[in-house]
Length: 297
Picture 1: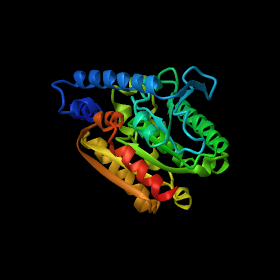
Picture 2 (picture 1 turned 45 degrees about the vertical axis):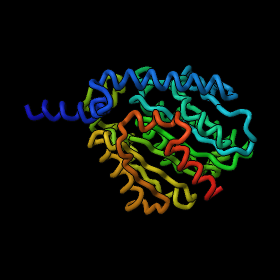
Picture 3 (picture 1 turned 135 degrees about the vertical axis):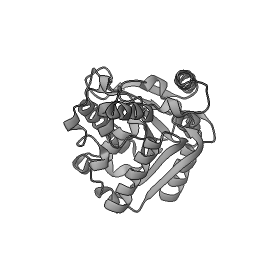
């Protein structure tokens, strides 16, 4: 009975829609999020010059969008990696951060990837490396002043795994243009997910959990590159999600001795409006990014 209760508690802790206070039910939270990001992404495509569905790999999901193709070649670039527990959402509904950034002459690249169960989590991690290789080469070719990555939820996990790969960063042309990363309501330790229904699609064996968790990776190589890492979570994220962000911050700050580290729990936000707000002209991601660009580039 204790084990059943514990698994039920984990199920709730890793169900972000159950912690929002904006709507009467979790289903309404999810439906609002899908409707919002779909509409906001359509607005972006209708208003910003773009190039869509650029293939960066051989499988159907390995495509990305460049939004702001009218901007100067040397414009800074934000790369956005969506969440959805590696099994939901898509590139097509994740273009919404681009419009406010475009006004500040920042290009947005939205990365798609194959989803579980058609792809395994290690395969998805490799796909993000493929996408990053494409982005860095594009940035090098264009002479971009700097590249930033942002990931939400499972997307923050994928960005963190990218950042941990010192061999990739050392050997990929253009990677020196990496300036910073925004990890938003992220999952950095996947061990407990093995015991939830989220794992039905992910199909993550228990023995893979530690190697696939950024919480157990090394990030000391980022210090020499002076990469800034912004870790953000929502007040109305679950306690487990907030704990994961705090523990990942502590790993980078105390163990990896990184200096350019920021942690913030955003007041009065939940797991979904912490990114929905990116469609607003005035939002914290745009403000942090513009401040970082003005300070460092």
